[in-house]
Image (spheres, rainbow, N blue to C red):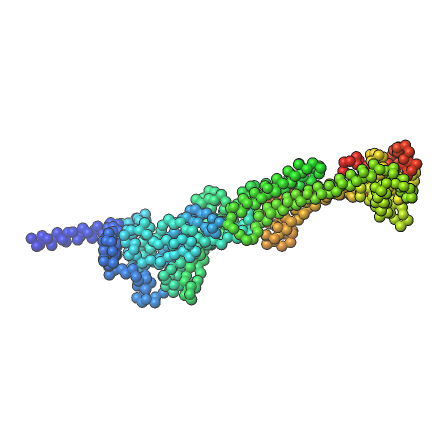
Length: 588
């Protein structure tokens, strides 16, 4: 019987040896293991289903001892090298919270020679290695990884993680991770801004003398394209890098791996939904300067509505970012447009003030003209009895005219023009000179009495075509203000906008500014209407100035000079004076 048992044992041993020689098994310390469960039971020495792992320790593996310390046989052994990599699958920059959310697979790996094994000769190149069961993960030595700038609790290893141990003892832990990282964002160049964020990781328990971080170079740019696995409608990753740093905490150095990525904003949304509308409503506000200043409802509507739209655009821009105490390029541009629209409102308010003054001056002129005969008689004969109101009006008009008279007491065409403008009329110097020349047949000046009579008869003798070439200086003050804003508004707007560009971009001379590739986008072309409007305003101003400077005076014996007939009985008193202005009741 004994001999038979010996023979059976020998046969079984021979069959096992043959099985090991030809089968795909795990080999460790000369022992063959047909499954990962047998191997981990031999290494960790217990049943993985036990609730308390401490009750079933194994002398083959001590999880409290670093791999390098076990290998060298001393506690002060060299550092263990821990590699880290993050495979990005999704990202989101939360601008209001100064945070970056990334989703992807984290990979931690290190070498532990205590877990060294080999595959049997029957294993092929596609044979899987040792996948550690979930229950044994707490018994595995771990580098205690953590994320430095994680806004939430750092994620520890869990039984749901995949732990792969390759031949040679290289341990790799992989799991799907969602990280909420602090990212210090700067918005000065919004909407063409770049944000730099990092994913710094290290060991919380072991310092740099015990654990040293390492990691491969990363490439997020390919993953962040429309054809890749990662895509964002608002951001694109322009570059990424990884570097190891030694950071000191309370005087103790720790090794950290910093993965950095630079995100560039896709600014089309802000350009099309904020900057273009702001530009269009700014142009609408500018168009108000070309409307008739006497039509108050239209001017008020076209001035006030752009202000409200600008305020809405500014609020929308600030609603998408965090509360900041500095200007961005976007908000500064919108504030600039808002300020210019508000200035347009103030401009029309001042135009209304000037119109009211002109209206009062014309009303006073009408009252004086109604008493023209008594006033003229009082001026010719100061000793003549006249009502007190007539004397007061004559004295007031005499004082007004004498204030513009020369040292000889006479008024030339320029002085007469200033008197007429004081009474709400806006003739040009050429028109005054032509009227005086036609009335007095060569005269160029009038005395005080003649000047007063000329001003009082202004509405009776005015007719068009006496002299050509009315310029800006010949317009009423209210119209001069409108014309000035037609020119200055776009020019000042363009200059202020370029100032914002220079202030928010680290550029040198103006020539280098336009060489920046960022101007080859809609952001640059959104400024083009400003230049077009500025050019149109300057052309209008130049045209009016050329007309004003080239206004001809009617020569004395020119047969083509325009003529007009004065009312009967008026020319014998002061002279036949005809005004060539437009309807005096309507401001020019």
